[in-house]
Length: 273
Image 1: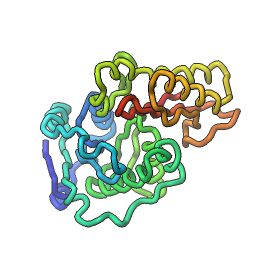
Image 2: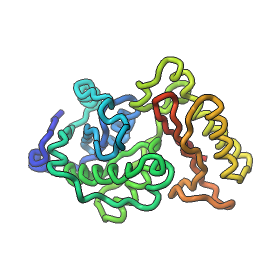
Image 3: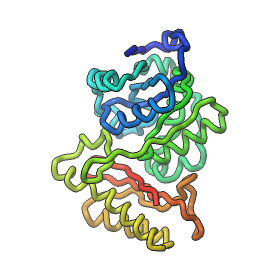
């Protein structure tokens, strides 16, 4: 496995066969590795990146304490047969203040964007930079971060980038908790409580399956249930699955994204209904 931190060296490598690319912030778990395995089905070679992107963290968020486990991450990627790891430092990817940024669509100001100002400006900007550096044929993103998936897919389409965006299913612990690097922040008691977010989303899904169409009422009920259990919920909403737009009564392909804080840890999840 080749580990490259320099953009010029990355671009100077021999072209070879097409690459499938999995961008990560490191601290890899089985969810990330499932994306690597999915990438393997879409191209002969697989590349990953490890970069904690300051641009997508708001002041007071966990940029400084975000887990950095580079050596073990590389061991896991090598075991999966990854051919290339791009691991730039900040000075490499942002050699000067990044005053040019991608302006994401209005969707970026809803759901996650409503609670994390300019989060998707940082996400789309770093993803575009990584795409330009790695030049993959396809890139794999997990469905847990569904809004991110939708926005990156739209960016690729509107900028005519020659990259296929592949969606990977959310991997879960046995109790239903979506795998996430931030799960490591949870105390033992919080970890026991954490699956409730998925359970609440599943309850909304079941109600939708029974024909309930009071989308706003279902979201409000879910928020109250989380708050009653000691969470600080940000949102639980019913959206259209295809574009995360507000659904109408006739829409049948639906998604239920949610985010809430448990103690000091913010968890996100999403189910398809």
